[in-house]
Structure formats: C-alpha cells, structure tokens
Length: 203
Image (cartoon, rainbow, N blue to C red; front, side, top):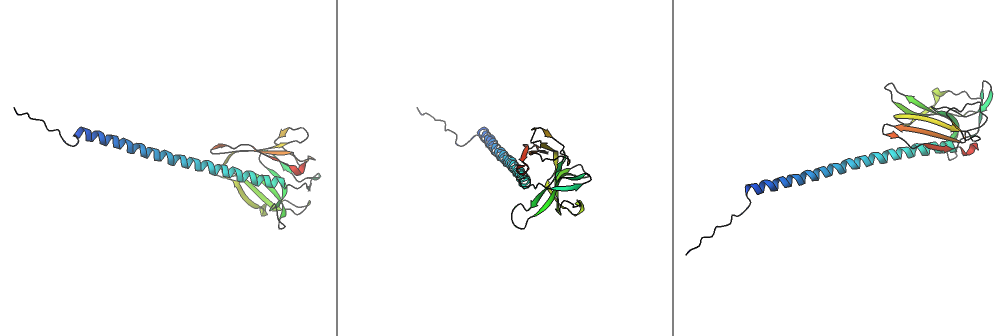
C-alpha cells in the first residue's frame, strides 16, 4: 500500500504577511512618536533653561546695582532729600557704572515700565551721569536699555528697616533708605520667584 504524504506549504500566507506588515507599521509609528516626544521634551527643556538664565541675568544685574547704591542727596523744591525714591512701577537711585574698575563713574539710574503701542510692556533701565546734588535730571540724554522684554507683572516693594513693614511708595521726603527691595515679575510663561535685594549700604 502506498501512502501519500501532503507536502507542507513553504513561505508565508497572505494573512501572515498582512499581520507582519501591520505589526511593523505599529512599531515604526511608535518609534516616530517616541522621537517626537523626545524632540518636544528637548525644546521644552531648552525654553526652561533660557528662562532660568534670563532670571539669573536680571537678578544679578539688579543685585550689583543695589549693592553699589550711593547714599547721596539732591536738591528739591523743599530743600535737600535722599537721592532715592520709588513706587510700585519703578525707582531711582545712584550707583557707579561699571560697578568695578577705575573707569567707572556715578550715574543716576531709573527703572521704569516701557509701554508699547501694541500693549507690550518691557522693564527698562535709564542712566544719566551724576553731576552732583544740584544736577537737573535730563532724561532726554539718558542711556537706555531693555532689561527684560514683554513682562505681564511688574511690582516693586520697599521694606522699612525700623518697622519691617513693606510698602510700594518710598517718597524722597523720607530721611532713610529702605532696608530691602522686592521685585515681583511675571512673563507670558507665568510668575517669576520674587527677587529680594538687601540695601547693605543703607543700613
């Protein structure tokens, strides 16, 4: 008796091929999705780093200028007053420029919000050479620089060294300087950590 054996088919069937293609497509799609997530994560990390660097630059610049504050007086309509004043929007004081080195001279600094026609607000700094207690503050000849562009919150606070109380108004008529200055800022990405600057020379 002769027995006939069925030959096993070689290769893939059409169904197996379709399944293999579907699995491969899914793996490729997951790989590209993973690459996209990594790319977006790197962009997000880069934005965080750039924002942190901006915070550091602003904080260090203001810290150096407040550390170098000079206790000077100037003429006013009522006599001579401290060369320092401030409110919620900005402040005015005297410090050298640059902070170190023999070439530095004294300047009157003014921090103000710079408002643009489209509604954008920048944190601006102006400086005019200090000419003495009798000088006229001519801001038309000031050096101007944008310290931080596109701010959404800008609030200055001043601490009374005797009472410890914070206020947003430091009038030129005061006979003392604030012990500390606090700046509250926010940009399009949210609030910054509050920056507090002790006025060491004013103590």
